Length: 197
Image 1 (cartoon, rainbow, N blue to C red):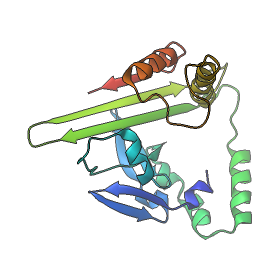
Image 2: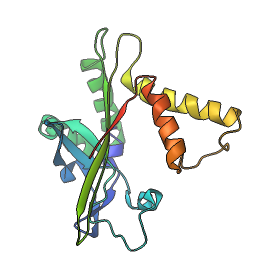
Image 3: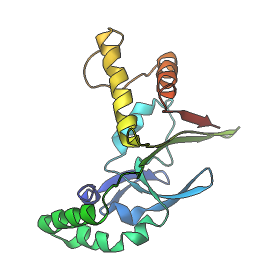
Image 4: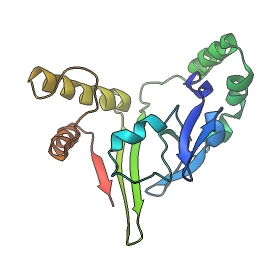
């Protein structure tokens, strides 16, 4: 994660492409169901615009793929950012080792994965806003990260083996019926993506 923070980011803001050398400096507030988060852009968001199959002529005013952190993260990590910005690779490795030693995951600790995909559309006639939200907390059996990654991957593997999906790396489930089946499968295994609009 520390190395990823050294990677410049690109996103669309206010209708134009914006580059950020230090992603954490582009941190903004983001509220999900009343809970405050901070979000910063990840790498280059712009190649992913096409995957949303927006109608011809639509131009996104804002398009950001980012990382959510709990509110207060940027202030709490101020000293870490100094090393990320100015440190050598060896200093970054030493910081990572130090953080892992000082803040290990202990028995009884449970991680949390929060994923939000949000779309707002405004035309001269009307406006619409919707959000899919996945909010999963780990338990004593497995971490939220393991569940959020392994369950969809296992389902995709079974679909390939059954001949229902092609092998290889590709965008998954572009058709609504397939997406609905996939979301039903995930919901049955504790990964409930909730739509609000």
